[in-house]
Length: 459
Image (cartoon, rainbow, N blue to C red; front, side, top):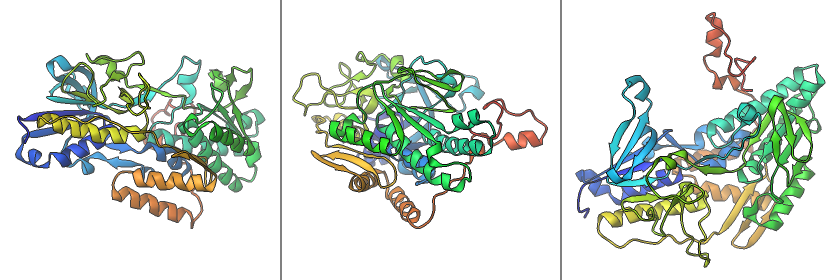
């Protein structure tokens, strides 16, 4: 039995936020029914994005609707508040929240009181002061960015096919990806595979006309799959005529020219930035302790160190790795840990409410899998190394088992089956990003200046 009425505030609707709230509503089903517990989830989006499927969504192998999980359907016993937490005063057990209606109301952010706090806002792209990056760079963390990038790549092929200017054609067919982690390598692999397939439908664009460049500052890519598999990945990408540049940085992309630290210059209309992430800025607006990298310092029980009634996990939390046998080692901020941490975090909140002893989070890292395009992949799982088709199949099987809800599993599996029977879709729907552009022009309005010179397109 819960000793007293508890208001639980979950900040974030990603892996940790959704799975924590889902387990809480299951464990506290009777208490929720009796009104002894209230769970509120504050999230900027009404869905959770299963990010490992973003590259396949960008390549058109999966519908973008099936990459996201609707929170209101899954968390039917929780209160879902679409907005953002801008500040947390844990000493007073209060958070400041802005919602979609805040600006129209003109009353400023609303104050939300709580008894238990779960901070799981996730992370944001870690950018550097590279000239031109803010103007021309494309991220790859959200489903909107993934679909926008797909539209953009196909649109560049359309531009190259129709222009008479060789300089414009060359820039349109040059694609620069910065960052050799999972996001960069998988996005590059899937999109290059898609573009090579699409080229057969262009009378004057050949796969060898396109330049795909991967820029990585360190001396290896995909460190999670091990050094041997990382070297294999570099060899496989170069075999596909992808220019992999290690120990290289992007110095500038101003004026649509990618300037690299090795002196190379590439006129390009596509710079995809996947060079790491950093903790969400809201953590700096709390009175909770953080480490030197901006993550909340946590105990093995996933409570925020030195406080009570505050919990954290995932990208926002520095959780000690008790399985490492090494003092000061922390769990990697990835989905594998986040999903498992959410389970322990929710259980510990229930234990705390019921006056029971807490559990420690213990999970030894089992390995990683990565897709490099259709029927290509690498994997290092439980010490075993796989590459090619077996690794690609393991990648799909693993993530199919992990994507939330049976509904999503069935839809994704059906799409994979259909994609094996029918041809890829290669159409660009750039106008989705500016849905009012056509009507504005028809009504006599001025063409949109964002993006410049192309009110209907995505570039």
